[in-house]
Amino acid sequence: MTVLVTGATGNVGRLVVDELVARGVPVRALTVDPERAALPDGVEVAVGSLAKPSTLPAALAGVEAVYLAPYPRTVSRFCELASAAGIPRVVALSGSSVGDTHPMSSGHGFAAVEAAVRAGEFDWTFVRPGAFMINSLGWAASIRERGEVRSVYPRATQTPVDLGDIAAVAAQVLAAEGHGGRTYEVSGPEGISLEAMAAAIGGAVGKALRFVELTPEEQIAEWVGAGYPAGVASWLLENFAVTDREPQVPTGVVEELLGRDGVSFAEWAKVNGAAFS
Picture 1 (tube, rainbow, N blue to C red):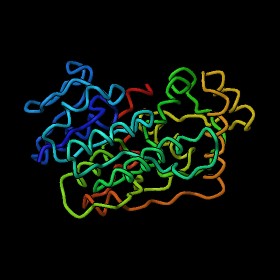
Picture 2 (cartoon, one colour):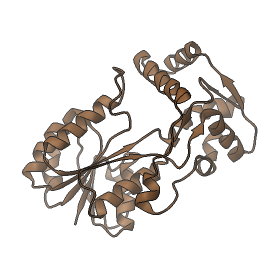
Picture 3 (cartoon, rainbow, N blue to C red):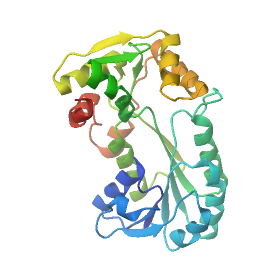
C-alpha cells in the first residue's frame, strides 16, 4: 500500500512521512520543494501542492491512501480528483476547534475539510489534535530577553500535544485496519496550566521564570501589537477563558492507539530548551 502524504514539508506532514517509513509503508510525498523536505531515502517525491490542484492527478495515480493536510480552499477539488483516481482511504488532519462558533475560529476551516471528505464517500478518519506544545514558542523571545512569561489566565489548563504524537497517530490509522469512520481527538498526556508550562520551561533552561499575569485587555493589545488580527486575538482569548473555567482533561487517544505514553510538556521543553535560552 502506497500512501500519498500531502503537505510533506509541513510541521505534521513531514513527521508523518518519517512515521510511515518507520512502519515499512511505501510513501509518496507531495511537496513543492523536495530539497527543503530532506526526505528519507526510498520516499517517492511528487512535486506539487494542494494549493495547485492541477498537480494532484499525477500525485494520486496508483496510491491507495492519502494523508490530507488541512487546506480548505481546494479541498472540494482534491476530493473530486481523489474520487476520480479511485482513492479508497483518506486520513485528514483536522482540529479540536471544529464546532467553535467564534467567527475567526480555525474550526470553520477544519469543518469544511471534514464535510468535503465525508461527501466524497471515502473510507475516512479524522485526526483532531488540540493545542500544540510548539505554540509555547511564542513565549521564547520574552523568556530569552526578560526571563518572563507574559500571559492572561495563568491557571488556564490545556492538554497540549507534541507534533510527533499527532504524526504517529495519523500514521498508525493509515497503516492499520479498523479506523474508518472514526474521529480521534488527540491530546497530550496531562492537563497542565499555563503557569505550570512556564515552570517546566524554566526547569528545562535552568532558571526560574517570572509569570506576568496580563489582563484580557493587555493580552489583546500584545497579540495585536505582535501582528495578530484583532479577530484572531479575540478567539484566542476566548479559548484561554474557556480553559480557565473548564480545565481540559486528556483524551487518552495516543496511549490507546500507540500503546505508549504521550510526550509530556516537561519532556518537550527539555528537547526544545535551546529555543528559550
